[in-house]
Image 1 (tube, helix red, strand yellow):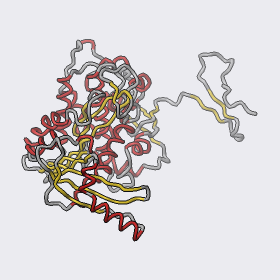
Image 2 (tube, one colour; image 1 turned 135 degrees about the horizontal axis):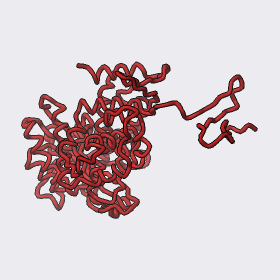
Image 3 (cartoon, helix red, strand yellow; image 1 turned 90 degrees about the vertical axis):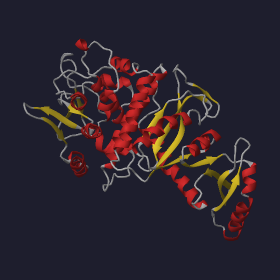
Image 4 (cartoon, helix red, strand yellow; image 1 turned 180 degrees about the vertical axis):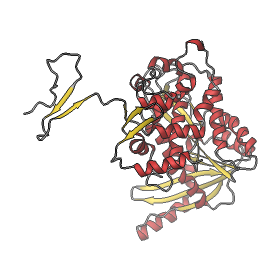
Length: 454
């Protein structure tokens, strides 16, 4: 048996560079050392920086933040801190501790702070941790306003309508974070975040951190009351449609939306009264299944008033019989002209759009890594993850017409961002040397042309 881990320099002095010899390659001695020079494993970070330049997102966030540091002793500008933390997250390094290694990466230095390989390193983990703990609730509100302003600015012409997909999601907590409280439904300590996405484009309009023990609808009216004037100021004639699941089905929300002239489609929790209203549709669905063996959805509509409602509202019922038994769903809506099936199909697309965006935000952007002790620091972290989400989402828009136009953010990161390259500085250029056999070279060329056009 050969020893693949032996060092060629054993016994030759500890100050010599390590060399690892792999004996399986018989015709030549296959040797690995760690003296390749300035090399990065994230060459696609160039596109992240270019997309950030296009959106001006990090710069706008930085503009609404205060910096109490004595500027005579500052090595890392506020903008470079915002970029360093959000670019790390976009590249898949969600832990603040990752900064201690990445601060020396030549391409991170170039993209974050316009530094050459031989220049000083980026901020360390302690510096970034202090940075994360600085913003208070007033600065966080100003940062959220930046997200709304950028959302509005992406459409130079007011749209005929927009869809706001509103949902709550759990963020399990395993430390001593402030306001990380036990929630009976999830059976653990969580933050109970509220997210508002654009239902068609997937843009993250507003991310809100909430204590773990609140109801899914908690604060939604207050957030919409803060958001709507900003939308109406720029888009006074745009129709706004709200979609939400049964976790937000509370009378206060219906009444607020009706008073403000918004349309809505919101899921309802099934109960016996709703089932009774839907009995004929369920009977018909059962007859179809028994006679043909086919699953077929049958829809109904009726006026319904729950005990906590001040007046009746239109409810859409769906009935189908599956092999495992009846399947019924109900929606409340003020869309009075659309037929029941059209309303249900519109609601169903929420699962394909908003819920997939939440999965990307939580699982691929790692927005559930909120491990600071301070509640406001964790909300700021959530916003930094939102910056990373928006930068990757913006990149995906530029991939229309390519094989990656519908790829997840994880796929885009693995194939287009996580690219090894050698970084070399000359007197007039900073060279990024990618491998000759890079399989996605044409997509890189296409993406560069779209991002840098004009």
